[in-house]
Amino acid sequence: MLRRVREALGGARGARPPVPRGYARRLPEAEAATRADVVALFTERVADNRAAVRHVGADELGTAVAAALWAREAKQIAVPADLPYGWLAELDGVRALADTPPLDAGALAGVDAVVTGCAAAIAQTGTVVLDGGRGQGRRALTLVPGFHLCVVHADQIVGTVPEAVTRLDPARPLTWISGPSATHGIEMRRVEGVHGPRHLEVLVVEDGLLAP
Image 1: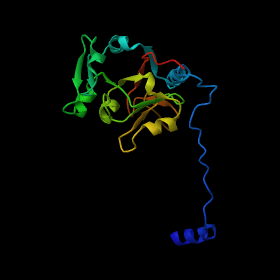
Image 2: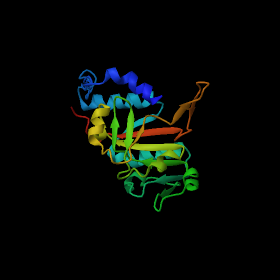
Image 3: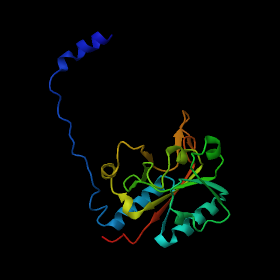
Image 4: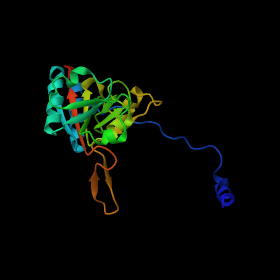
């Protein structure tokens, strides 16, 4: 069989035609004339992906994290060991389990939520990217709990996937998240939470960086 395939391809050997590489690396200026436009587009696309999204100031982050977890009636959460302390400073009545030593699958399945940061965020697709860096934790930490609360700083948001790729290290474990985990069976019925969190909420920390 392979011989016949090689023979069939024999006439096509030779120099391969060039592959166009003129990718659109930035958003059109009409969509992203200012930083505020990029952040606004990210917010819109996150919502399109069926995730919740809110904007908060840097001094409001601890309160916003606590409010999001209380709204979900979370009693116990998992967090990366190096999550900034201030993010949980206002949390009351919720037990936070640091992932050190690594929590086992049973412990992760028993928490109500996970709180992390991210490595980058993409406006065009409403995607957050985690690479296991500071405040993000290992991949299992964000795949097992049913609710993922992700903090995104405005300066982490770029326009397009190519822009994000230039910021990321391909040698790191990259997790690309565009809304809650979802799948479709043969009945074409959408089911959420099968391969990851059923709910995603993004807190955009504006940091006063929305100037042009």
